[in-house]
Amino acid sequence: MNDEWQPKGLCRGNHAHLFFPPPTFERKDDRERREMRAKAICNVCPVQDPCADYALAISEPYGIWGGTSEQDRKALVAS
Ligand code: SF4
Image 1 (cartoon, helix red, strand yellow):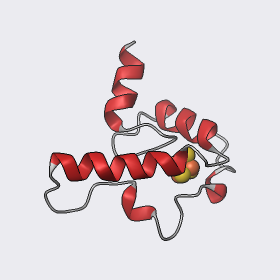
Image 2: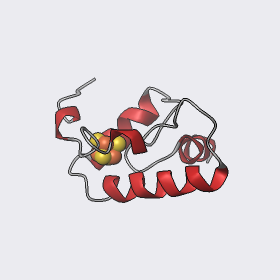
Image 3: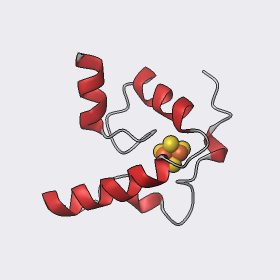
Image 4: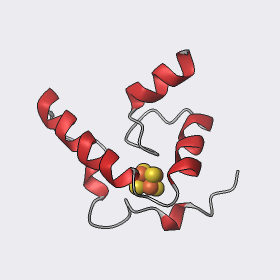
């Protein structure tokens, strides 16, 4: 699978913490706020499409990828 898109992702660097849950408990409203901020970055990322395709192809279980959360991806697979 081609992964040349990965170095071009806007989530690399300072914003990386927004894309995955913290190691400690995260309240629902905190998670929703974090995911909304991550998705806003994905929405202006030049590699959003290949990133989302990749996450679906490998059934990535964690984090925001290509503007989708794990719940979003489960719903896409089920539809
Ligand atoms: S679409 Fe989102 S998760 Fe994927 S590389 Fe871009 S910023 Fe990162």
